[in-house]
Length: 90
Image (cartoon, helix red, strand yellow):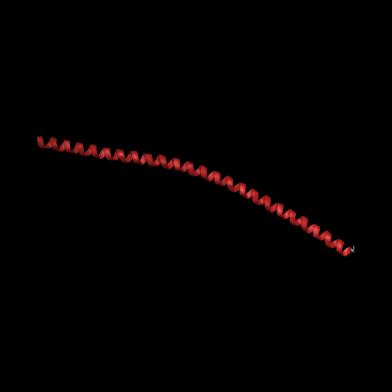
């Protein structure tokens, strides 16, 4: 074989090795990115669950507070009616 073909074969082998290394780096980087995304997804799910629990507590508080307001209004009206009836009797 001539030196020309030996040089060409060595260059092709060097390019193949370089290409293989680049592909390996890209695959490793993509795997790392996928793992990071999975970790973020888990963190986001946990945050959403925590916020949903807070929202449920808030909604329960609002429901209870609304009931208290309604009961207060009813008691106020009853007291007002009793006061009005008491005034009429005098």
